[in-house]
Image (tube, rainbow, N blue to C red; front, top):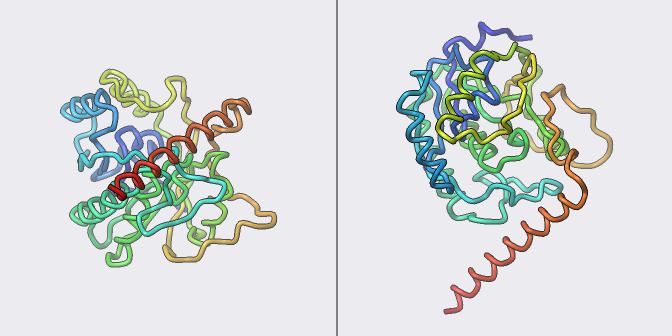
Length: 272
């Protein structure tokens, strides 16, 4: 089992501002650099807040790539996920999602060197976030040409447990269980809230420990999603399981309606 010394002077690459403290608080203070990929949000107020909070960020090692978010969030069928070269198959804004992959893949090359220890999102996107999956894919592509150790977070939600287990062949036996830094977590949470850019639940309580898994086989094929599979140890996030059935059905219908509407608009534009 690995310990905190293995992450000294690591490079943390995360999708959005606040992901670094939500999923990697235990190694954040030891990082030599923290790269946040998306800055410009689809929500103008969040964009303004992120720009302001980075000007006096409590951690000086933070770098923002300020790439505009796609509108891919909550458009994937996580019961039947399909991997793509750019991350995961989304039901909306696929062109922007694909462009962002290439922007990110090119930008992070300047921030990772041979011999580094890199920490990023896991292949299932923690609780099932399409842009988290995209960041993992971009970093794992870079690993094919750079000699660095790659670690991913050990958070998962009920939404993506099946997809997590499909990714089991990519996780090595090397993992770490580290104490979360709750003091730093609360400090950064207040900083984000001050700038109206905290995107997680206000009442969220960090676990006592969090896990990280090393990735050594980025191209290992997924396990078939059939039969009984035993879960890896994870930091479990209950998301869909706590929603009433009617709420889950309504959200699914809304997602299907929006995806269908945008597909119809694309077809209409092509026939003009």
